[in-house]
Image (cartoon, rainbow, N blue to C red; front, side):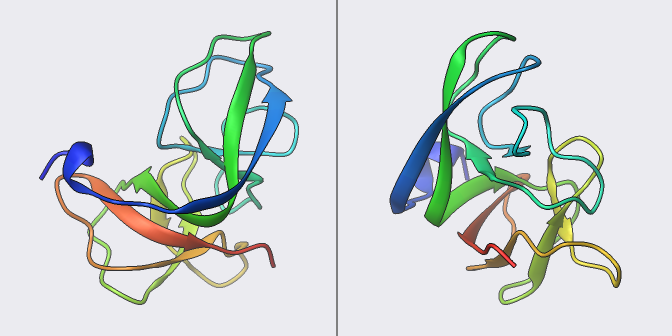
Length: 114
């Protein structure tokens, strides 16, 4: 299943300046970087951007995120070191909750700010 087969419903997008090259479908931190391992994300990059460009980040609602591992429906999600979705582990920040299992390296999540 390609990303075009997945649906998502962004409720709020914020525009920030990318401080490094960013790729769509990855977690972004509050500074405009790729979100780090277990770190809290601002949201998910809506499209690709190069360093210094403004980028739209989905911060509320549902989003599609590239998954670094198999994720089951209902699992809590955190960020890996490359801004991909991974299953939450103790001590990490929760970035969302899976709305369906991962498929072809992507997962739909309900974004969470905890």
